[in-house]
Image 1 (cartoon, rainbow, N blue to C red):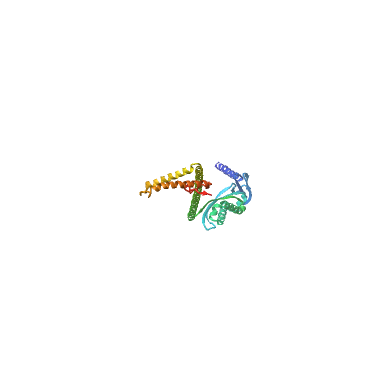
Image 2 (cartoon, rainbow, N blue to C red):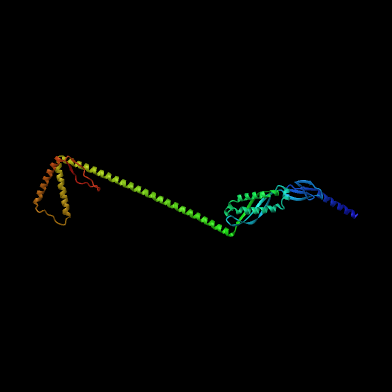
Amino acid sequence: MSWLITGITGGGLVLLFLIWKTFIVVPMRENIIKERLGKFAATLGPGFHFMLPFFDKAAYRHEMREQAIDVPMQSCITRDNIQVEVDGVVYLKVVDAQKASYGVANYRSASINMAQTTMRSEVGKLTLDETFSERDQVNTNIVREIDKASTPWGVKVMRYEIMNITPSKRVIDTMEKQVEAERQKRAEITMSTGHKESKINLSEGQRIEAVNLSEGEKQRRINESEGRAAEIRLVADATAQGIQMVSEAIRKPGGAAAVRMRLIDQFLEELGKILSTSRVSVVPGQLANTKAFFQGLGEVASRVDERFAAEVTEITPRPVFSDGKPTAPQRIR
């Protein structure tokens, strides 16, 4: 009885094994390479498939989705002989499961090695500054070169991205000093430009101020000269009118006597001033001569009046000096 149970159990296990080897289910994300007696038979896509036990087997399974593979950091030498550490990520996809199985032993490792060598070659064509500014171009070149090499492998390289570019510590220190010097240079240029503009604005203001002051001084002098000219004209006109009025008064009856009396009054007034201010007593030598003096003065004035009335035809205004005082009148024949 026990052998029967053992036989049934063994038969059931064999049946399950045969069923397991006969049917296979392929997931949506994979492709399976089927080999029959060690030879490629077919590529099994997603779904349910039948296989001959002991004759067929699932030799390779391939992930058909896009895969991101890290490229380890490696040392590269730039065109200007600076050592940098570069790493990245390569994105690839299996497009032909048969080629990926038989075209290369390990397409992942081969893609990584190809990315490293291509990256080292592309970085060597650029200077250190260009490696930072030309990343997109470097990525494009690496993708193009890897894609050419991976076509027989049944792998399509979608894109490549450089993650880090790390120069040596000595180079980093030098770059920081260069950046600091550049900033200092820009600061000094900015300060010098501001100082220059300040000087220009200051000199321009001083020039405008000097022009305004000179214009004001010029206008002041013009106004003063015009005022003095107007004053001279007014004084001259008034003097001429006064002389005209005096001449008209002299021509009238009794005018000569009035002039004579005016001269005597001025003489006596001036003589009184001299006697009052002088420290020396002044006494005429002959008192009788005083009467004769006044009589003679009267006769002289009478003759002057007669001759003046006969000969004077026009009296011109006296010239006026800059101090505004007129000179003695002149006769014109």
